[in-house]
Amino acid sequence: MNIKAVLFDFDGTFMDTEPAIFAAYSHLFRTYRTIEEFTPEKKVSVLGPSLEVMIGKYFPDHDTAKLVDEYRVYQRTFAMDTIVPMEHAETLAAWLRANGYKTGFVSSRRHDSMMPILEKLQMQDYFDVIVGREDITHEKPHPEGIQRAMELLGTKDVMYVGDSPSDILAGKNAGVITAAYITNEGKRAAVLETEPDIVLDDLLQLKEYLLKQ
Image (cartoon, rainbow, N blue to C red; front, side, top):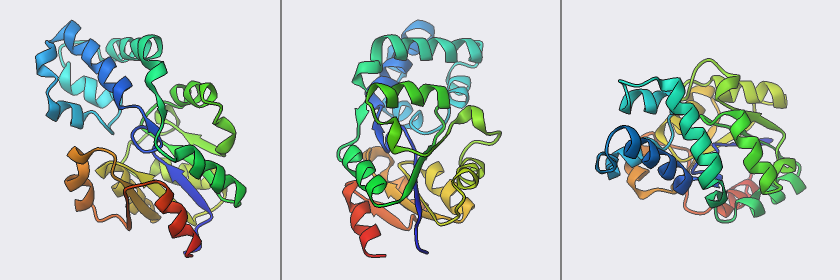
């Protein structure tokens, strides 16, 4: 396949959002459960799925929509400044743009949550399409988000880069090349079990792969 577009997951793949995610979930656990219950295993589990799914799972006796809003307000108010691009992410995005690749995001994060982060970091112009949770009906590993992005970009010659099993499975279900960027060692085994086409330990390895096409 001659790749014409590269799509990224947002959290943990292109943006280092773990500190912000953990801070907001910690707030919910302190408020509605106990902070001790936010174990290392739970921390790994919240990286990838949507807020609605994980908050519904861990706070079943509370109004999910209310806690999702509380999470978002907390992260936006107290943790936004902790969000930075992953190492070499901006360099890669600039290279992809300069070399004619279409780019975008397909994420479980809401579209309207990604845009303020990209604008704050002045990176919004690197990307042609953003597909967030509110833009689709079915979450990853369903291929709908990637398929929607391909329609918007006008190409099926796509690579999808993600850091979770659901990312890789979504890419496989969409019939695209999959690249796993291992950014959390706690997820490595589960991600590798999905058999991605490429495994990255540095985003610039993606540039090397594309140059060999």
